[in-house]
Length: 239
Image 1 (cartoon, rainbow, N blue to C red):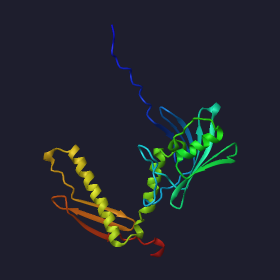
Image 2 (image 1 turned 90 degrees about the horizontal axis):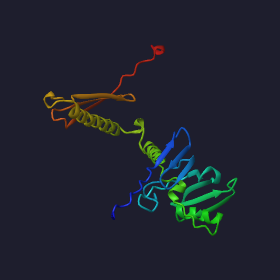
Image 3 (image 1 turned 90 degrees about the vertical axis):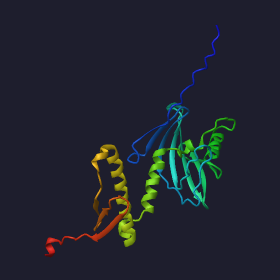
Image 4 (image 1 turned 60 degrees about the horizontal axis):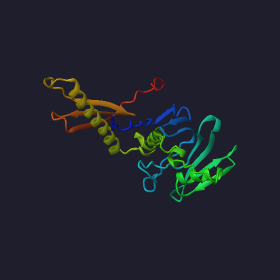
């Protein structure tokens, strides 16, 4: 008796990142095809969007500037450790891979991370057919690094409250109030009965030495905004 059962598909291992970054610089990564250990020397930053470059392929990872990482390849007995560097030169990324006991040798490419990874493999063995994934070789796919760079970018782009104009300070406070109002609406929808008639009447908070009071109308749409400087208490020594 013949059967037409299809072969069971092999489930791919879900990518795993093990780390305590940024407190510790080592990140361990594994998936169904590879296992790397990364030691982050320089986290790097994403350049301005005008000339930020992406890797080719399905996901298209962003390519950082001033990035340096030591990558450990393969198992402990055959482990290779390389130092990978990316720097933008004339608004284009250039890739280096340093290798050897003291990283005394290197290969360089202006094409891509995959190209320089292949140059490295050829330098070790001209006859090799080994091909590396450039983004994985350099750790460009690591989610924790992408998240950390994004946080840094927001922190540098976002001005501190004291450096804003009066209008800018009021707009930032108003944006916070709108966010709180939206959260209130979401939570009351989940936690309150329709007959409870829950309404957010007002919000008051302070930023630096400025306090803000927002009153909401019945439709909870228009926000009336009042900002006033907080009264600073005098130091007892000056009384």
